[in-house]
Amino acid sequence: MYKNSKRTVIFPLLLAAGVVLGLLMGQFMGRNSVEARIKGVLSHMAFPNNKLTYTLSLIENQYVDSISMDSLAEHVIPLLVRELDPHSVYIPASEMQALNEPLEGEFDGIGVVFNMATDTVIVLNVIPHGPSDKAGVRAGDRILEIGDSLVAGRGIPQQKVVKMLRGPRGTKVRLGLGRQGIPDLVPVEVVRDVIPIRSVESAFRIADGIGYIRLGQFARTTHEELARALDTLRGEGVRKLIFDLRGNSGGFLDQAILVANEFLHKGQLIVYTEDRHHEQLRQYADGTGRAQDMEVALLIDEGSASSSEILAGALQDNDRATILGRRSFGKGLVQRQIPYSDGSALRLTTARYYTPTGRSIQKPYTIGDGEDYEADLWHRYENNEFFTADSIHFADSLKRITPGGKVVYGGGGIMPDIFIPADTTDVTPYYVEVAGRNILYRYTIEYADRHRDALNAVRSVDGLKALLDSDRNLVEDFVRYAARKGVAPRRGDIARSRRLIEAQLRAYIGRNTALEDDGFYANIYPVDNVITAAIKVLRDSTQQTAAASAAAPTAVPTTSEGSAESAAASGR
Image (cartoon, rainbow, N blue to C red; front, side):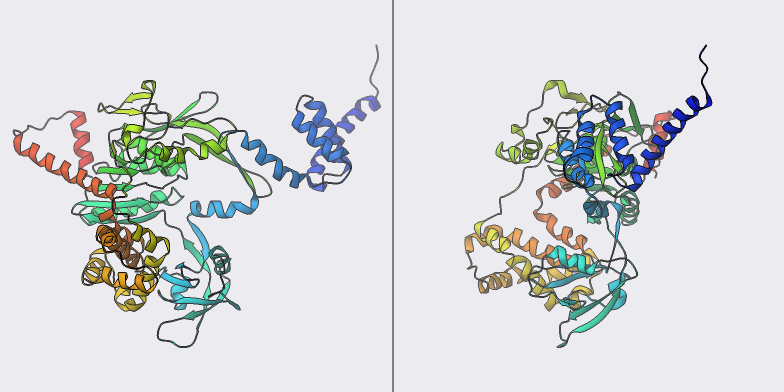
């Protein structure tokens, strides 16, 4: 019998160990090394039918010129991902920070809200206790210099100005400020620090007993922000809520689940996901929500997507909210973000999500045809969907029934319970011109300059309303201003657009106060037909409940488990 010598046993083992070591070294020593070529050969041997791996190996090892495989990958990977669903995407390292920043809930900067409508950096608001506030920057200041660079009147893009103002926390930036009543530049030095990004853009009492919350995105801090807003509104006597998700394109799935949990009762299904192996992950409410007893009107439109649709679907399917507005975007795919070592990442679709009644609300798409998918909203507009619900049709096979007997549909977004068309009633050529030429907004900047002390003293929505109500000539003064800027008065148009113009003026002036977006939405809502409809729905339900209580005989309380749970929920 043939016996293996030590040499015939040890040599293959050493060779195998050398190859493995070579592969590991090849990851760190560069792609043109001997080890990298061995890796290419082995890849082909291991995956003889993998044309992509084989082709990359050939290019890496046999192409006539040296080429950066990393650079090649930057071009190839997006092409690969483009052949998948519309929501799988490759994110280069250079774009990661800009994409993640809004969702992370913070960035490093100086802590001001500004606008460049007049080619000058105008400070609209200073974040309280932030870096600029500590350095003495005030609302209404003009940032004319950043460091040694003049930025006023230079046509510098706003994004470039943002980059000049931002920087690592602890670093310093010198600003040259133009300040009303001061002839010379006011120099300040600001030490950059962490600046929070709010996902709850606005939260205030919009009517007696009714609160309004506008959620811009689902970031890491969303649930925490919402919890604080709900507690504050309850302290102001709010028992009903308008929850505005219009234009909210989504964000973190876990935050949508946590937000839904605030409104649903224990044991109610929030959402479930299903992967390629048909494995499901179900999420249920745990009964700790702060708003289980609140009546909710939830607002959506074609810009509401992903996590917004998860929340809307959860509340609609559990009969916990009246949904108003227009059909949502229709994104029912779940992405997992997978990082690469160079700081880039792949957001890969790994599952589909379903609402509690089993609806998939992902709209139809064709693999690799992202262009037609992106044109869907334009097709809706052409089909008149923004103006009439009769143009929207769902297959009967997609119909589901909620526990309360409501009919809902899957297959392409969340359809609201009450359809509210886009409102163009007060839009006239005069309004289009003064708004389109930015004359309306520029007037509010100059108005804020003239009334800066009074606006800086505003601390509440009611205080802002009282201040603006005292100016009975606001629209007439604006019309004169617009005439000086080249837009002649058109009395018929002005009469028709008066409510819209006045609301826009008050809203932009309100945003120029410490109230920020609360000041804006508290003044714009009277001309927002979706919000006014939501207020009516919530008020009507109060009247119906009162009428039913007056007509009903006195009930004897029961001791059933269900009744006890309801009583506990309503007592929160």
